[in-house]
Length: 552
Image 1: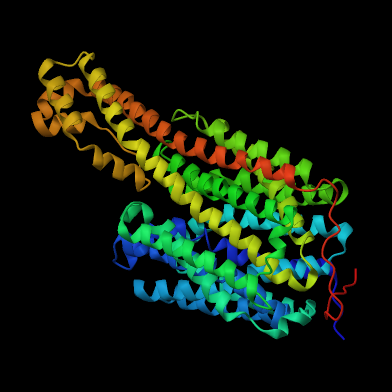
Image 2: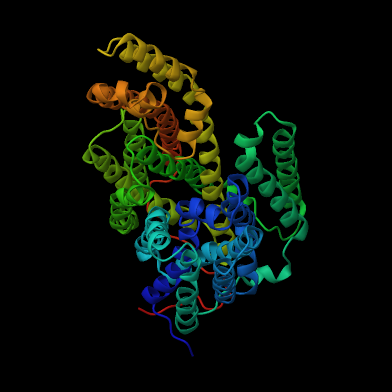
């Protein structure tokens, strides 16, 4: 008979989790290279990201419920196999259409691995150690999201973008072998009654239309017929889902779970935190590239303090949660993470890296203090037999928060940017007018600054490119080298001043997004006070469930 040691089970489960979460962020930095190599446009290549996020969000809950029914070990192995095989197909893709298709199929495996890995870990540990184990699980989820851009940048730069997919094949094989050797099978005896196909369909349609609307809203227009129709469809099918779940005998999501104040509050908190976490991290990388002028790879390396602090504080927070309950950790974590985001709204552009690093440290500590207690809290309220679906609900809330956060913060940034660019043009014109340049040179430069369409500068900022100003080249092109060469020292100094003006104004547009993200995170503080104070006993396998026991 197979004997499983709980810490080895944790290692095997984290294997799959890390792969799935990593692939939601590792591809971002390779998008420009993929676009160039596969000869496609930006609208098409973004579906390499969108296809993964759409499928991943829709299948998390059904995958968790299916694992409860058919066996969590079995589904975990299926998930790793699908993910690894499709990763190989993605790396071999020679056309963008094939890459998008493989990414969607890859997300099927990811949607299985994430909730099932959480359910496996939850059932493997006794209550007094569950917080520490789930702290490691949650900490690794945060680390995977944070190190994805760094690893993706290294692979893309030195090996090729294909290897951000190829690397999953050997890692996946190791995960399969580890799970076969270590993890014992477990399932929910009551789940044999069925999968609730009607409820599953209603939920899937609601999540698909919501996620699709959030992904496309900024490009198509939030008030467009397509987006409003998708949001309305999501609301209607969401309401139908609730109605169906109330009347069927064996629902895919037992709505009684949502009546538990702690379970509901923790899921709302992870949604709000997810909004600030993913959106804030995305915009910080954009800020470093657009305002500070970092390369994409340097930006990815710059955020490593965040990943390191999350990895350290997650397990510590889980262990403390085992002893005193989740509320203190959640309160401190939300305050820290929100403060890191809000203080980032005061970055003025072209600042020394230490001013960015301390914010990353504060955010990393906050994230570690939030991920672990929330994960432990949610899984501590779910009956062991429904661990898969409970994990699916939790991860769906987090994923919707990620997608919603990016949509909201991009909308805030795009709304704030035009006025900032216009103000920068006017301030730059004033600097030129007050300079010691000859009148003809001033007039030509000012006319060029004010006549450059603001939309061009906005597009540069949105695409992750730092606007550059070279007045010497402009004057040389229009008036010739004989006129421009004597003025070069003045023109170069003025170029730097104007570039600083644009950096400062663009930074203030990013600041709006950081401030909004902080507000959403701080609103989640209300949920912390609704979560019970005492340490959670955690789920217990119902009578008849197989494979609950572990050794070690």
